[in-house]
Image (cartoon, rainbow, N blue to C red; front, side, top):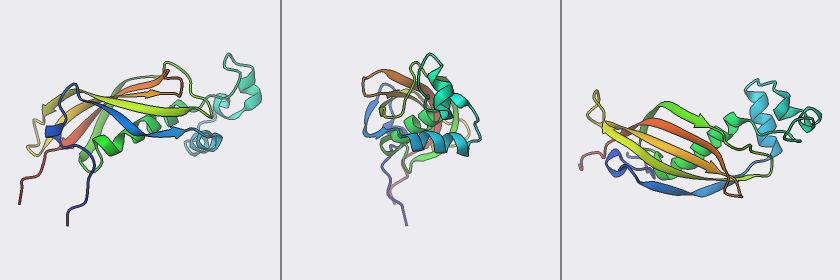
Length: 156
């Protein structure tokens, strides 16, 4: 039984293709506190309002690893849902502006590289650049993700 997929096959991911992802997400305080504590990160900048009030930001920052996960997650339905074998790595991850509780994140993804796999005839390697923006269209996260993508299966 084949499972439905929404992602793109390797052959459909040409360099220069840009996805404007439909999903958006407003970040809550629960997101930030739960993610930060689940990952055992004691950074008071994310958890302590008094500490954060004394910083240049004046309030807690959302954990940047949560932001990275959210940006990658928002991209899945239109890019890799059911068509990826595995993530191979992430490069050039930057957070040019902070994310705060109440910010709404939207994402675009660009295919910046694609090549056939040298070791797997049924797959190719695609480099996605994910760009996350807040509600003011400020770039808050950019990351290049290398993924091993399945080729379109032969018709049976």
